[in-house]
Amino acid sequence: MNKMMVIGSISTDFVVTTDKRPEVGETITGTGFETTFGGKGANQAVASARLGADVYMVGTVGSDIFGKELLLNLTTNKIHTDYVEPVTYEPSGSAHITIADGDNSIVYIPGANNEIDTSRIQSLKEAIQFAQMVVVQNELPQEVVDEIIELCFESNVKVIYNPAPAREVQQSILEKATYFTPNESEFHQLFPDMTISEGLAKYPNQLILTMGSKGVYYHDGESEKQIPSYKVQPVDTTGAGDTFNGAFAVAISSGMSMDESIRFGNLAASLSIQKFGAQGGMPSLAEMKESEHFEKTWNIK
Image (cartoon, rainbow, N blue to C red; front, side):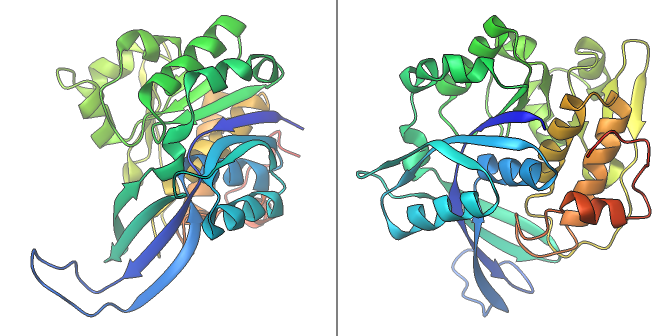
């Protein structure tokens, strides 16, 4: 079983569904409201755990009722919470999501997620060295993300960096990540002066560009490659990227090839968007194996 450490946000999602988004100053009547579990870190941890990885979550929650529920959700999904700390002076993180026409827009409030610092990461140095894969995202302070990637690089531990939400990142940090996985919008914010093809060629077998229905692109050192997505009718795209990252982490750390790992991630993401909620649709390994697209050669048990 893969031992994986996910360092990132743990939040509650407040999800509104509506036929259209309101204009400025406009009040409309929505069609539904639901509270679900989220946070990019927790989402990716859940995605990996459901696919059989032994996942240790690192993060911070508030001491409020939401924090208690977030911890319970992690343990329910068989995720180790030894490194999740509650704080009393900040509320738990939250995301406020509007879904219209099968797509989403999000306001994220970090809350307790921003209370993790570089000294906490240094205290995890020994634990990180025992991980087969570390996964980190941008819903943490950038200096903390930098410290994680530097520490993994120094310790020769593989790290997947999902630079979302997008913000400026030093090139030296990107170069030290084993893999980094922006979507198209995030790529252009990271590399405003580069075309997609130029970026892929500069970071072969490292930059994995997720393009939604267009599939996933990377450069194998010889040529640019596209791995097509699986065509489905989406119900809710929230968490699709997190599902891909969690599944890709499981596959690549299991010894699968880049192409296989991306196809595995694409299949998990395609299943996830056919259900409601960031974590609600994340498939188990058994559900993956029921798909007609599951490949018997995939080395996942």
